[in-house]
Length: 213
Image 1 (tube, one colour):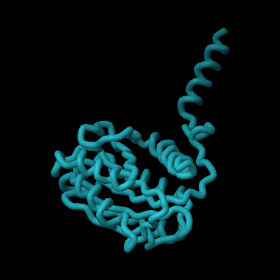
Image 2: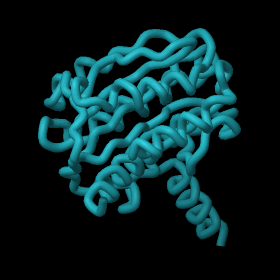
Image 3: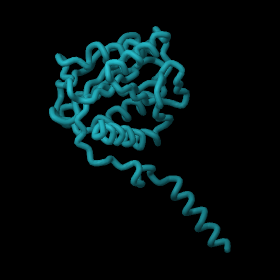
């Protein structure tokens, strides 16, 4: 009887420590999505504690997308006090070239979510920066969700983006992540264990939805 109990305890312990992504729900589906994706990545001071998870999540997700001129195009915006386009949708059109471009600085400063979304809508998703008029546009906002600059303008800018046919997907990073200044149905990366399964879930969402739009 004692041996049986020990065996059960041991099997439960093994199960708890197994990687989350051994199950079918977190495998990447076959993806040839035709989609223009802009990642807006929070580099403000409030993200510092979860900086590594945020960078790892962003890199993993982009590396899983079928990046090329005729499938997925990717652009990256970084933001803190202000927002900046790191590279355009048509700058890198092979998986290897975009991997080399994923270089991020250290975090610091305020959190200007409003300007990140506005920059995506007004500039990143334009034809002179590689946006395709007949392709689905998705903005992936990676942040702790707590805007500290022009926070009152965030809901209005999200609405403007949606009005411009830009889908806004929100990934909230960290244990203290908040949704009070961001609308939508967010995905959560609360710790290191969430990085890979949430990244795969996001890629599947981009791929699956793209085929039905």
